[in-house]
Every structure is written in structure tokens, then in C-alpha cells.
View 1 (cartoon, helix red, strand yellow):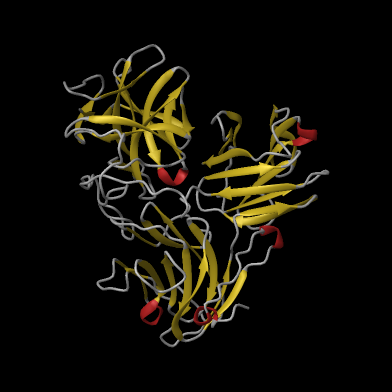
View 2 (cartoon, one colour):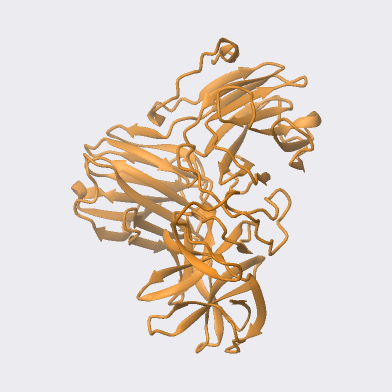
Length: 487
């Protein structure tokens, strides 16, 4: 157990460096509003807490309770509501009713993440936050603190560690996953195995992705450990015992994509006709191989450079759902750095980006069914430059082509512009529509958006086809009625 006097004695516990130990950090917090602080190395953390009320989490720049600071109070006010507070001041930034969210007799699991100034918290195995707020003046987070109070003592189990090893043993190490993509780096001679499950165990249903199997000669996708394999791809030399190799694994409505992290090229793809919700991933090596891993979920590390953002916030295009950041800029306040593409008022520029990053000044132009903001993006595919949508939490942009939705970790984002949308239909393009790309045949493509199944989804308008195509649920869907983006 961690001694609660560590803070007073100014002695910080050592960060765990290996998930292979499978030992979460345990700590006790007394009925005393005093935080226990620990260093963090990523933009998210999972924990479980047993307390009757008032589980408090602090995010800070240093190992002490000082400004700037975010506080997330879970189960406060007699276990009736939760809030986010900045710098210990009122009014609270967000307040959400959460009756009985905590329990003094059992552990309840939660996650907290911070990304681009967005601070949010959610329940274990749930991808969407129950509370979230976007700070217009964010700061880098380097430490996290835990405490209880107001009549509550608590027991916590906190997971740590970003880099870990797997032994030569056919046994998965499991962790929760909170979105539809993993970015992993693997160093080992062969047999990089990843599974996706709906429980922290090797039970059906399960997807298995085996990279560099059969002595580093081929890779496969397997379902429920059954043969024949769903996909087999020759991949000689794909793993390396001396160098970390990056891979991206994406899943969406049963569609699995496995990509080379350096080039973005898809080398395996399969769609499950009967998909299941993925809540956990597992990793392992075996068959004579040991491996070292780095895995992240696309949340910015505190050590990453903090980008600057627009000097004025963009206009909101829709009402955000309760608990989600309201009309706030997605970047950081201030003046863009020298050399950053700046759009004069009314003009638009396309800015290169990747892996879910949103450049300063990009305006939200749609929303996913979850309520997450979508941005206007475009990417190259099959000789075309295709407009589409960027979902930051997925770590990529999506473009429609050939009847399918295609994920792109490398893309361009629209910054600036008029943000004016005009309802239209078919091939009727009003004068002043913003050209945003071209088909593989050289036909100009424009930006459109469509309300579909609770989403406001961005896609491409191809005049010769008389429709707006959107990427949605793994498919390319066409609509004759749509909104068109004007220049």
C-alpha cells in the first residue's frame, strides 16, 4: 500500500515500468482532503475506487496542490453529483447528476483523460464520458492526485505504465480500451499477437491479430481461435528484434483494419458479419519470442509540444450534448507560431495532420452519434483527393470511396473559411461552393454534410453523381438531400 504521508514527506513513489507485473498501484485515502500525487506519462489513466462518496482526482503540473489544476469530483454532495473544477474556484465548470455512482462496499471502475484541453471522465468499459469540459487555456499535465473527504475514506487501485514486456508465454495481458483504435510499437523477433474482446479474458467472441507469425513470414486475422484464418497476408521481416515497429489496429462496426504505422498502408482487413462490442485488448508473444511494447490510445503525452491556436474561437455549429465540451475552440488560445498556415478572414487553407490531431483554427462542422465533434478533412485514396470527416478520438480521418468507408491516419484538415452551409439537392451546386478535392478522373469534389441516424456526418459531393457521399459505419452512403459548404 502507498503511505498517505508520502505527500507530506515529499517522497514520490516510483512509477511502474512494466505491465508484465500485472500489479496495479493500491492506495488508501483517509477522510481528509489531502491529495496523494503520482507522475503520469500519458493522457489517460484507469482506476478503481471503493468509497461511499467524494472520490477526488486532481491533474497538475507538479507533485503538489497548486495552480493550475483541474479537479474531477466523482460522487460528491452525498454521492449525488459530479463536477469539474479549475484552480479550486467556483462556479464549477461542469455539473452532472450521478446518483449512487460510487459504492462504499465495492470497487467501481473509472477512467480520466486529458487531451487538447478537454478533461473528461467515464465509467470502466464505457467509451463515452459522463462528464467533460474543454479548457480554453489548457496547461500540460504531469501529475495526478487522489483523495477522499467529506466523511469518506477510500481504497484505490490505479494502473500505471506505458512500456512493458511480454515473456515467451502464450498468455494475453489484458487492458481496457476506450476507442476504436490502438497504436502500438513492438520490438521482437516474431509473433506480435493482439486480441480484441468484450471482457478482460481470452474468451469468445474474440478477434486475434497475429503479426509476424510463422517465424516472421506472415500475418493473419483469426476469429474465435478458429481456422481457417479470416485473412492471411505474406509479411516477411515485418517484426524486428532490434527496432520498434509501429502498427495501427482499427475496428468499427465489425470492420478490422491492420496498418503499417510508418506508411499508413493497410496490410490486413476483414469485416465480421456479426460484430460484438470491443471493450478490452490483450497482447502476448510466444513460440520462442519475447517482446517489448509501447501502446497508446491517441491522447497527447504531457511531454509532447503544446500547439498554439487561434486568437478567436470558432462559431459552434450544433448544440453539444450534456457533459460534452460546449462551443469551444479545439486548439489552444494564442497566436499561431511562425510559418503556420494562416487563413485570412473568409479564406480557407488545408493543413497537414495525422493520428487524430486537430490543427489550431479548425472549426467543428459535424457530430458523431456519440456527440463527438467532427472536423472537415481530406485524404488521398486510389489517385483521388477525397473530402471526409475527422474523428479525433479515432485517431484518423474517414473518406468515402468505392462503396466503403476508408480510414486515413494521414490527412489534411480545413482551417478557416466561411463556415457557411447551404441546403441543396442532387447536382444543384450554388455558385461559390468550396472546391475541396477531385476524383480519380479529375472531377472537382466539394464538401457536404448529412443528418443520418443521429449524426451530422461530413462527406464529399460529386456533381456528376448528383449526391453527397458520407463515410458511415464502414460504408459509403449516398444522399440526394444535403448541405453544401460555401467558400
